[in-house]
Length: 469
Image 1 (cartoon, helix red, strand yellow):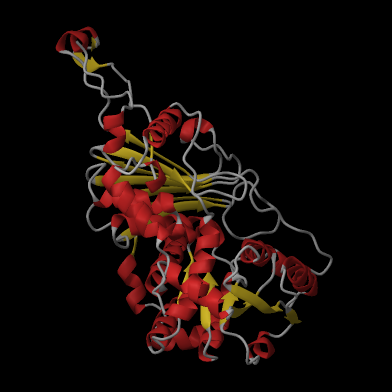
Image 2 (cartoon, rainbow, N blue to C red):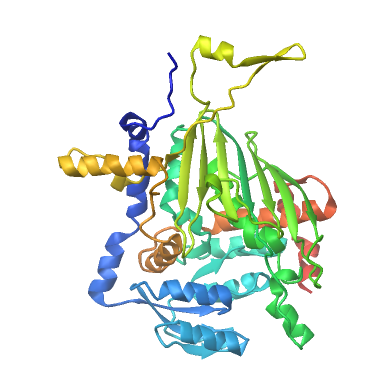
């Protein structure tokens, strides 16, 4: 008789109940008391945003849903973006062209920095020096010397919050997957794959003014941008660092400008391999000619991550405004078979004996606290939970996060300005992520293995002064 461990049963789902409950409970306790205090005192955080392009307007849409802060000011040097940002906010903020004038306001508690990458450090630095708490989009910094200077600045101001826009750290799916890995649910995790594929990806927006065209298309030019590595890969490098528990030892890679011949000078495709100190490896790909995602049965496109362990595999992707986050896990190895069946499934090829089973395991959903059966559940509630799990296993339904991680990260930042709670995406997470962006681009440009510790000597002394001048 075959031993098939593949069919999801009540016992299968219970196996992860403990770890999922812990992770979900942790995710649900993001400074809840602080919300109560702010509401009770009717004393909302007064915040402003510097940079109201496409990303800034997107964040304003999410900030509009929160009731722990009020947007009092916006700033952008490009008037169409500034006016669009003012229109996007529900709070009727005042507009500024010069961020230094913006920072001279006395009523700003917090500042969100959503400018092009090359301006992240100078704007973040000035905002911190003005005494404000700062949320800065990833990548946190652009140049090696900025790594050292920002670390010193933030560490000299321990009462100010600096949070980085790495929203996967605020996702219940990712927090649960991290807990599963830490608890050994999928064994020793040795490899990861991640991709962000688009078709066609960024396209050049034309403008009669060549200089303005460059600035409007800043992601496509190296003087302003870290290209695909900074704008896309940084999110997924951060997840690998988080799940593996540290930064890579070195990176190798290949990049090319092979398809998008429109005046840009950043690569339109990159392939990178990161080797971590314990032997784990992350294989990363970003291309601009195809958006297929070989996860979740092809039901999603563009981006996702796979973590492979000795006892199982996790497939995961963050949600968008229109699509839910997804998280699945698989047993490893596949189903056990009897000796008689195994004998039938072997074939002799050129004198070698090859197993030809090829059958994998069925996907199981990553479950949240709401799906766990408790002793206080009524009979009906308990049966409904098992029914929902069964529907998950058949692909009829998928577990969904109750909130978009972008909402959670923004709310967490605003609450932290009142409570002093340490951000999940903090200074060191942001700097480690930025360092790997810089070193990854260096590895592709110089066609060599680049070590993480090279940053320790980069951007110091004369080299830093020369670059600043």
